[in-house]
Image (cartoon, rainbow, N blue to C red; front, top):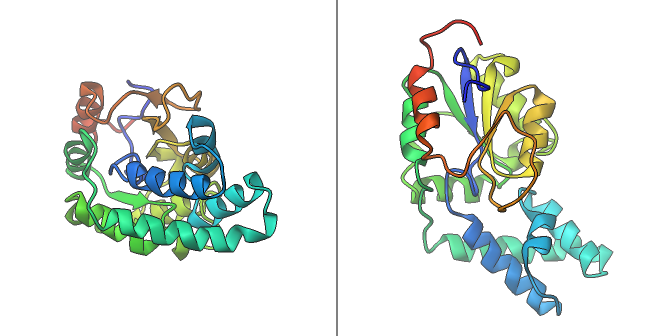
Length: 224
């Protein structure tokens, strides 16, 4: 567990599939689009789009369907379908609220999401987590979203924390690449079982007792 620094200055969380069970909404939408183009949707196809922005997911699907010029059209359909699914609500994932509150009691926290602001706000509100964060950053608010480091660097700057003394919580390779490029430690709870992901800590759930113990110890030590 102590591969994560006890002296962390800030904690930055991804949202989709990490704090909030929105991946089910995205999967319903993605499955429908793949089916409309005559393709099944399973783990291999999910790996192509998970963690990406709406625009990047649209481009990836367009390439997969052999329609490279249709990225914007497919992205627009994806956004509309996800919007519809999210309107039905999405729950916080196990341990998310407890971990966020434990971290927030000791250090500044933020959300850095590859979703657009519209979907990020709905997800956090639906899961009862909106009041937990005074800082959140969405893909459409930066020039270069994940896997570029800008979202995480922006979050750390807003929190007054050095990236190399901050911790990111992620669930996908795209998000991990972003956090690593920004210089953060990375704790990972994979959305796709069996994925081989870079990490400083790896677990099956945010409800892991080790994580809560680590969070409750934040601010008690000055060394990493």
